[in-house]
Image 1: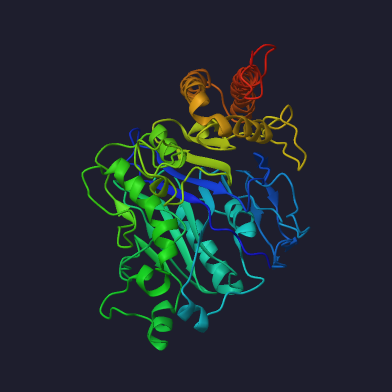
Image 2 (image 1 turned 60 degrees about the vertical axis):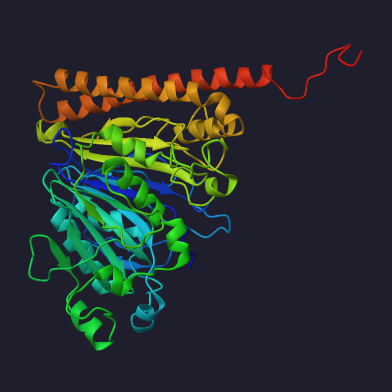
Length: 483
């Protein structure tokens, strides 16, 4: 079985912590390397009864049953790794027709001592299968936790992961440990949480079923094998997680930067492994704030790898793993609004490519199809056909001339964001009076308009940057230059 690269970054926001009363779960899906073509698709409702699901990634087999609802997802466009091994569905993140959102997964690690007592299961429920086996069948975030938890208990898992669920009222984060252990915590309505690639959940209250869920027998498991270093309390992170030097430089700085943005009055060290999972923000959080964090690179700190030597030393600029980096593939903000009717309350903001160069595009999820260039991403480079490859091309052009081009790129991204916000307003105004399938058809059509406009603007930007690059080549020589 292939080992995943730990790369993703997640953020969760409760409805009273957001500026408009929305719940938000969001995650950067980074890849194994610099290329992992991504698409945006919608899968129709169907009866799964009788389907024998087999994972192409690890051979998991599940006999499925029941009727499943429609849902969106951002699956792989190409279906093979470099070694030819199948990677399966990998639907990653989306919103179903009941306005339940799921993001799977945030790759984490279990410490060796725990793994000795509960090893990972080679053909268990892993990231590639989770959305497909769960999202079509749930009508609330809480149901999502319960369904995934029961699958892990039955089939085990071959990975340590964090998975986010949300509906209009609740936001939950579930973490697995070892082959069969898991816990989940509800994010308080007035709070947010940052999740890098290490275990996040801390103290578990086993008597508070409103805010905690967990695998049956997890307390007995910990007691049987003497795993709790702090008797009298149950800190999931301290019992099950790794806390090594690599975590301090790869993971915790991302938590530090997110909490620096939303709780600037709190002083913390980037390498601290005791930062809390959950914080109450000092201001209300907007979609744009989540976007900024998920596409950031320690901006305006000495640790910015894209900064200058005036802002940090060469050592400081390379000290920590950046959020924006070459493995960026697909970033989604799954927003469930509470100030509009349910038929058009769910929006999936999607960013393909290198997140600090490309824009987040808003897509309503009560739809029956997705824009053609977002639904296509083969292994072959086709920027004219694929939004993924178009934004990857933008990365290729900008990276060598970052300081020369970034202002123009930021103007493009700001204009795309303003346009997207305006489009949401316009669509919400014009959808009024429509019903049932008429709403679905309308939102599908309007998503196409939104995507086409922003794609056209991206092409204009690329055209401008290509011209500037060609007209300012470093390899020029005029007749008489050395006379």
